[in-house]
Image (tube, rainbow, N blue to C red):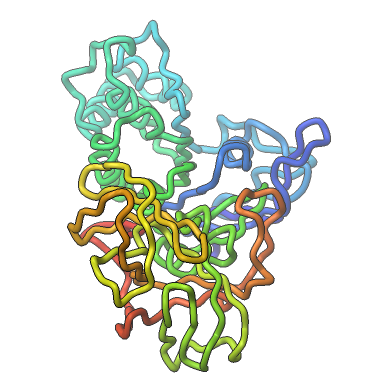
Length: 394
């Protein structure tokens, strides 16, 4: 089956400065995908290119097989049947909620009665019928977001683009809207491409995620696969495993680290004995215990964070790590504690592939086979950490 959206070798430049380079991906019909990356990596530029707001310097964009953009020309934005929700929502301050939604219908030549029926449907769909007569300054950010979504969907777009749609919302409201918007997009059978810098937002919303670093898509994968099998050290760091400890393959089935031996399952032994590795860990993947039988560390800082405190500890080698254990134990500054790796999936790369922590160089495309995910502390983990609805990344 042909792709619904096809972006092929796309490049964009502003004043000879490259913003996107050799970028390719496809979306299937009714797929919800996220473009994830730090500020300045080109996410919004890509949405604007797909919408037809800016020209390409190289490559092609096709929607349902129709050529929309090339360096030699493009189809006008209003002729693409693409809806867009802007980061600031772009609501007209002098129009009511109802009339803001009506604006999305002005080019469809519906009768007044047909417009009213569509507007009423959209108000019900995003659960704001009581706000129809309100003006944008009278709305909360969450309500503005719903109005912007209703306006974009009113024109029955083939593709919906959303630029950082949740950046102004508080965390509890975000989690409510994640599920609501997924349900709305599925109900209307809309294909969507969403831009975000928040990995948890991408995990919760998307069927697939494209990670942009330094103007490239460095990995395109399902949320669980992206998190459990990052394609490079840069990807691992961006997704939260920013801490690195050195290790070496001690035997065909074990990695030796400062925090002890980690057993490799027989089916995943990609390295020879003596191979130096770097293991990448998030604070949640480091467990602390009141035990003297484990590798020891000294608590040098403690930050209360609600359900679990964030600890900074110093190992005997001088290496400092951050840990956010969830076993309920409480530790004090100056206390010696046992330290243990507690990751569901171990992420490691040959040491020569490690790059500086900041993204100062173009990430290399590394196959996920270079990364190991497997057995820790004698237990083989084969499943993904899923809740009932969406991948959580934890």
